[in-house]
Length: 172
Image 1: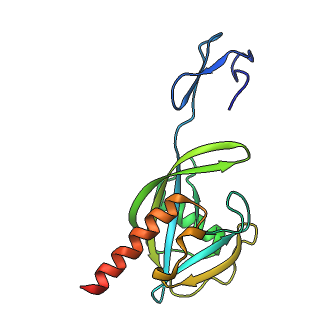
Image 2: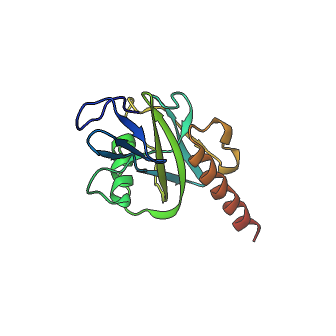
């Protein structure tokens, strides 16, 4: 990740654990901790709203709306902001579903993330999405979502649980 120490500039930085880099010259430690991200399962008339990613990572693959949590922001605020930015939709309330670890590779850096998933119903399909983020909007029956076409493993994991829970609920 780093070749030179960000503190003293010497080429004496070494891995000191799974998330720490340590400089033998000045004792500087850098911790590459898990980043928090949020994801929304938005439902309209029993269908899930998916996006096709307009940029990397995963450009052209399916995904759910979401993004990274900003400093001084809680997860609920973050998902409402991300959905507003990407889809121009204001969510009144969100319900926590669960979380899943993920790997997010961007510009040569591998980020370990903890993706926090929320559920929210919407009343109408979005009409004004951010084209820099969203190449296409799709509404799909949960059981018909092609999990292998999703950009991230965390989304595949949580959506498969969501689909299974829906199927179980309908059988009861």
